[in-house]
Length: 144
Length: 144
Image 1: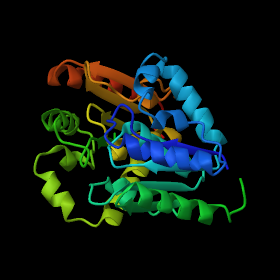
Image 2: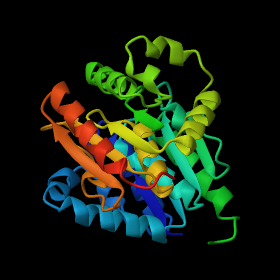
Image 3: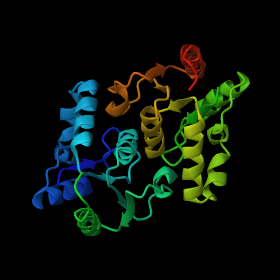
């Protein structure tokens, strides 16, 4: 599948090791992950030099092309929130996963869009199991 | 006009005095602002006791009913990012204003949706002038 992985950039990078674990897991499973580089620690310097309009148009194109969105939502982010709404309104399956115990926006935890799943995890291993379960469910849906 | 004012709740309340200044300004101009209470300092305790699904359904209904969205985006927030995308995809005019000098997501600063305006302000007085200018422009559009 073509999977858009969404994580905080400008909002903060505290959860970067989990971002990298999720992106690497998705790639190792043979999926296409156009945003995988955003999960890694070197990305902030690289992204800082790119024109904002180029980033926006690139990310919207990747969102339009993807089969589903996997978002890590422990760290608040306007971009991730934007991408979640955009994907849901385009009818794509969305997983929002977050560290257990963090406060997450009620626009996500209270969201009743049927294509959305929200899951907490205790550590990186459990995050990968949450992702695996989501992929298992959506792989049984007809591809868009 | 019916104006949805969007500001960070779970993401952080550092900019709360500006949120209150903007919401009070919109009300004083005679607009309907269903979210005005979210701009004030007492709101966190009140909102904490409300069911997430009730908040989500209330906010989506308010978004569907509004003529335009005014968002303060200095503090990262999934909910605010979600609301910006939702309003733009529903064809509503959106203002994103932020303190000058803060880093804002490229999904906002690089966004080319014609209904979006992004503006920096130096202080609360300038924030109100930015809001006033936005309202002046959209008041000349045909109402939806």
